[in-house]
Image (cartoon, rainbow, N blue to C red; front, side):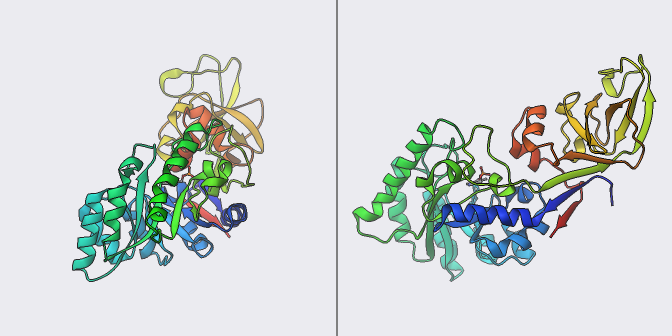
Length: 364
Ligand SMILES: *Cc1c(COP(=O)(O)O)cnc(C)c1O
């Protein structure tokens, strides 16, 4: 195996899930496992976590199919946009469809009817994200239509926050109000409403208890990372990732001999420069050049010279370091927030960007 690998602490993830569950009870908890379990590695995370989750959330139907193929039997909601021609795959693999338009609802009813089966559906309402979903102010005919779809099991109704992780919750509360107004349709007509109402992503799990309804959908915080520095940390969660590597090469570099492509950095006096066998093709952002820090033999040092596709260099100065020495790129004092800041992005992209070339090692 490569010396560069990602260690994933599965019991940590389970503990995070349990802490979230204690905070939102009696609401159910959907574990959001899209995007390769936020980079953690779906094949290790899903079998370990599925028994402890009430529902699993993914973005793509392909992600749902993959989970079925590796033996996951829990209900799976495909939350992203779906095209009508993808509906048969939902039926074949017993996946729950996010019905985000009248047309899709119609197509789902027809597909289920011709397959002589029932398809599970969650109605998607757009209350202010302006992504997929039927606008709250146009929801009535959509809900009405759903009542007449006898081949669909309308199990849920949901919406998604655009700003639940912000310190200012004015927009999030407006979205919540719009969603509640949509749900009032069922009361007004004395109709049973879909049993699972859900809206809360990580920010709302932490900051908006009124939004927990019957189920919550935490992604980032399930992986132990808070969405933004300013969010209220009302649930204790801890990161599960450590990105390990080892020194591949060690040499003294002299002043006047700049390091790496573009010659962007050189030492002021002779310095020990070590090479790490990891680069931007592994998801170690090139944008972090001359900004990142790395732990070598337990101590933090600056990354220097342009980050290459498969390797980058670190300045350990006057310290000793040789080929084979332990390196940590992420975890053990270097946080997702740090990498996000160095790369000019957010914690979500830092984690989902770690490429498939980096082996995942699951600790049970
Ligand atoms: C990704 C996603 C989530 C999880 O969001 P986090 O901010 O990671 O908690 C919840 N709901 C939907 C619809 C999503 O796409």
